[in-house]
Amino acid sequence: MPEQFRARGRTEPERRDLVVVTPDAAARVREIQAETGAHYLRVSVVVTGYDGVVPTGFQNKLDLVDDVDPETDYLCRSRGISVLIDRRTAWLFAKGVTVGWDIGPDGRGGFSIRTPDETGTG
Image 1 (cartoon, rainbow, N blue to C red):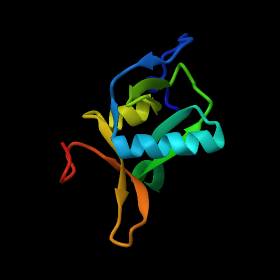
Image 2 (image 1 turned 90 degrees about the vertical axis):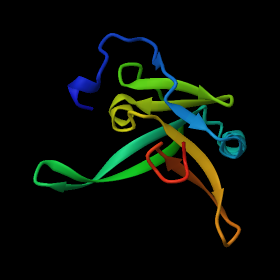
Image 3 (image 1 turned 135 degrees about the horizontal axis):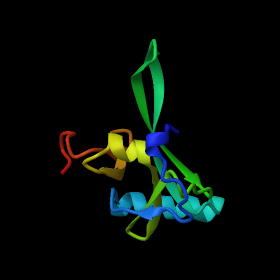
Image 4 (image 1 turned 120 degrees about the vertical axis):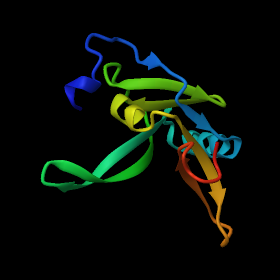
């Protein structure tokens, strides 16, 4: 993690309201947490491509985890779900992010990550 995204000396993650979890997504996260025993939902952005040294590709990612880094993570709570988001991802999602559970035309469900700029969200 680049130094500008570290809060040196923190012993607990800073609390921020950056992530909203929809009711359907919260229900599905609880089901998976009951199966796995994981405590936190982690929202992150992974760099998937570079043009020399400049990142050119990004992928949103969700994980269920137990590890917290108080120097790099923010802790959010939404609908009873504890959500971690690292400081770099929070900077990329400056206007916030919504984690949803969507049902596709085939009837299968999946998580979604949306920012306020994306169509159909707010």
